[in-house]
Image (cartoon, rainbow, N blue to C red):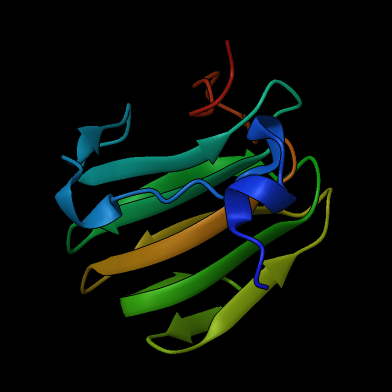
Length: 127
């Protein structure tokens, strides 16, 4: 006899399906950048889908822990190079850069802690 998921997992361990395709894009404090917050917790971890308009810039910031980004459309570029559609980039904690999307981009980013922006902007999951 096969167990159902409800029998295998208590309520705090069930899967959480996020209907990202029907979520509205939310504005950010950066011109030309919108987001869909897919996951966040009180430890600062987050998974965010970003849409960057052509020419959008993520200003100078520091990744305070590992950052991982998969580019779904367009490209995300910095002084180290361009990460194009279908490719992945990760940055270690302490990495500082300015990212831009010359032709626009849709990216999926995973953060272990919020970024720190030099201009004082708050990161998306900071209180």
